[in-house]
Image (cartoon, rainbow, N blue to C red; front, side):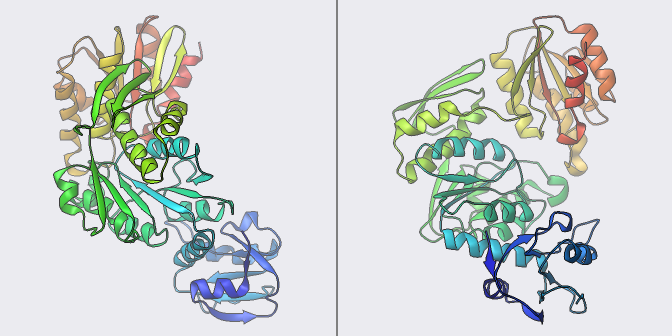
Length: 441
């Protein structure tokens, strides 16, 4: 998308520090290394970098002008210089300007786990009736939201945004510069409890998504006492859970599940009650947008799990289920329940550290071991300094390792053909290394 100089000034309320030649239209770039001729450079600040240090490089690479939050940063060669207090906010303001120009129906999704899966499921369904545009991968922060919106085709009818957070106020900011029509809080759990201090604060942060929800919009939220308490939205709200009386005839199979909702039958090519719950948010969003049950069912049937999210493969006769993109107590319990209720023996759980759980991190891991004691016929492998506490409270046969290579070597030597292995850990544990070593026979 290209913008006129006057549009950029108006959207960001920028002060013009230099104006030599402002004719034409301009694209936005935040990467000085990938500047195209006639781009406008927006220098962003991160924990370990400041884009202002690369303004000169951006100009040398062809940028016509740039934004700055330093009034003294006026460099020769730039055709115009625009001052704003915060360059990230300016970037978000420009993205919002473009979004309002295209004016798609905007669906915003947040939750402690399952955001990306729900977003992809939503895209699969809504694309049956609409021209959709969605957040790429899990680019769910402020910069990712701007990139998503500014890459949106002009014929987009529905924009699907995934919203993540690291602390209080961040989802509110994303909502402010997205102005959603439909907002989803699919769950709240203990992910990031180390940063926010309590599950209550996590629920509060997730419910910020409705702060800038249109008054005529709808909030669709997981039906828990905590979310009901934290929800401050005064408009229409729909609460959903697996306890819904409209959800019936659930059948879980290996690699699929079936259920009836509002007297219509749906099939998912993925296992787990948590994925059925995710689909309820998708179904109700689609119904809100006027889609028929037939098209919704077709879209759900086409949905396939994305990389590292219940990704099924086979290595030397061993079935591998890779769900190692992330892990927290709630998602891990859901994965374990699904795995042990659908997969045949011999079964192995390969579990790694769950990160960002704060002062109670050991207790959360011990809780998983106690949860495992409800099940039979499973062996446990843990990897990491925290995951070993899962083994401390379980009655099942277990083997503990501190690094991926040793765990991979043990699996090669002990998991016989016909075994089924579930891999689950926080992303930083890099469990793909284990799977890669297993494939190198």
